[in-house]
Length: 356
Ligand SMILES: *Cc1c(COP(=O)(O)O)cnc(C)c1O
Image (cartoon, rainbow, N blue to C red; front, side, top):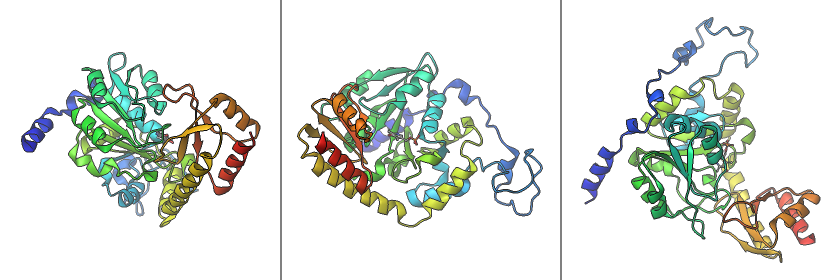
């Protein structure tokens, strides 16, 4: 049955029917510089009206970020043509909206409680939102999600590990959604490096309707330089490349990312420390008398239920500890979200919680 099924699946997916007509008709903007990357040494560049005096940043950055992609490609095991880089995941997500969602017509599906940016971007782009609440144990309700889709449902956002709930979704549930959702499935893997689950980038070739996003903002310690990564089929990547601003990743970001990513073992070492600190925090939090539940975490933060989230949040602020109050999100009533910090920061958090 599998082969027949696969053939049916494959022939059914047609990217062209999902891309907005205006986007399909676009020719990519090409900067003159784009064609001459690589043999810069011998050439004289009088094409872009730059100031010619070298100071390290007087030239426009590489619009295709070739060097940085080759470093990422080594680390992630995905070739550069399956990658698009953006000014943070937020830009990448916005490009995905603009490629696939017709304003005032199309809709997306989100699975709350989850990352707020999907809804914000939908609102900015005048795209409808269908919300299908996660189950009590914060897993996707596959059948309800598939029932919620209509012919204008272009994107399904799956955040795994999920923010703010901290858990990963069951891989078989995600796979079923990728196979059966008729639009594009976007898996946001901002926290994948803290997770015990495998990344879906390894399975891109199987699923032409899959987009995976990652970021250097969390595990890689570079939130300040803004670099988001999108992995997808060559066809999807080329559409996104056509609509991205040509110089969306600045020269300093590209340079700094390459430098840090090239320090062997650095990210792994920091991730290991953060995971040890996460275990420490979980055991300490369980001894706090007003914390009634600590949810399993596959990320660098912990969600916990308390007696009165707003009261505890304010008490912590007064003592100089800032965390996130998630109580207004349906499903997260009286929940606080704690980011795992340094050993000292975590000790300060615990001693403050004990004192209130
Ligand atoms: C933090 C976070 C991101 C990262 O966004 P950037 O714009 O890359 O900093 C993306 N998705 C989720 C769910 C996040 O929590």
